[in-house]
Image (tube, rainbow, N blue to C red):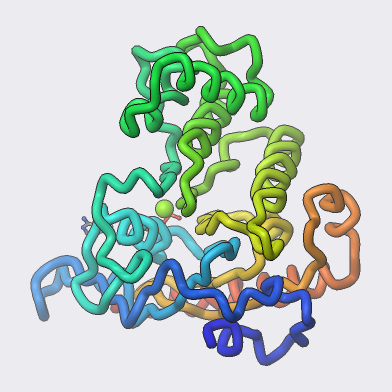
Length: 296
Ligand SMILES: Nc1ncnc2c1ncn2[C@@H]1O[C@H](COP(=O)(O)OP(=O)(O)OP(=O)(O)O)[C@@H](O)[C@H]1O
Ligand SMILES: [Mg+2]
C-alpha cells in the first residue's frame, strides 16, 4: 500500500526502508488537498496547496522539506485541526482532525512558551489539560526537562532562558503528555549546531526506543524542517514540496539503518547518505527554480 507508491524511481529501496511498516494503517491521510486564499478568479487569488495527497502509516517518522511558503505549516495545521482545506479530505485516525486533541503533540515553529510560567509549569501544561495530579505533573515535567539537558532550570521563566533553551523546553512540553502523534514545525531551528546535533540524537533515541511488542515504533512523527541533513538523518521518509502552488515534488524512503540514533555521527559520512542528500537537494533546487518561474 502506501509505502509501495512512495519509493523514488531513482533510488533502490531496501528491506530496511520504512522499517517494513507498509502493513501499518495510515494514522494520517491527506487526500487531494487544496488550499486557496482570496476570491475565485480575482487577482488576489492564491493557491497555497494544490492536490496534495499522501498517507502516513502509524509509527512512521516523516519529514517535509520545501521552500518557504510551500504550505508545510498549513499541512501541520490541518493535521492539528487548526485549519480546514478548501478542497479534499484530511483524516487523523480515520476522522476529521479536531482541536484540541490531547493525543497529539504540536510544536510550533516559534516556541510559544507562556512567559508567566516557569519552565516546569510550561512543560506540565499538557498534563494539566489531561487532569494529571500535581505531584505526577511535577515529576514528569522534571524528567522531561532533564532529558533535554535542562535539569536545574525548572524554576526559570522563559525570559531567563536562551532561545535554544526555550526551544528545548518546548520540545519537553511536546513530549510530556506522551502523545501518539507528534507534529513538529522546525523544532531544532533555533539551536546552535552542536546543541542541534545533540537534541536530534536525543529525540531520535526516544522515538526509536519507544516500540510495541512487535518492535515497531509507537509514535508517529510529522516533522517540518528546512534542513535536508536533519530530514535525512532523522526520518524514514522525506517529502520535498514545491512552492506556488504548494505541491509534492518527491516522496522518498530513507533506507538508512535503524535504530540510528547512536550512529548519526557515522551515517552522515556514508556514501548512501551522500547519495540521498544529493537526490533530495536536486529536487529541492528544482523546486526553487521551478517555483520562481510560476505565476499562479
Ligand atoms: N490566511 C492566509 N491568507 C492568505 N495567504 C495565506 C494565509 N495563510 C497562509 N497563506 C499563504 O500560504 C502559503 C503557505 O504558507 P505556510 O505557512 O504553510 O508555508 P510554509 O511552507 O510553512 O513556509 P515557511 O517555511 O516559511 O514556514 C504562503 O504563501 C502563505 O503566504
Ligand atoms: Mg512554516
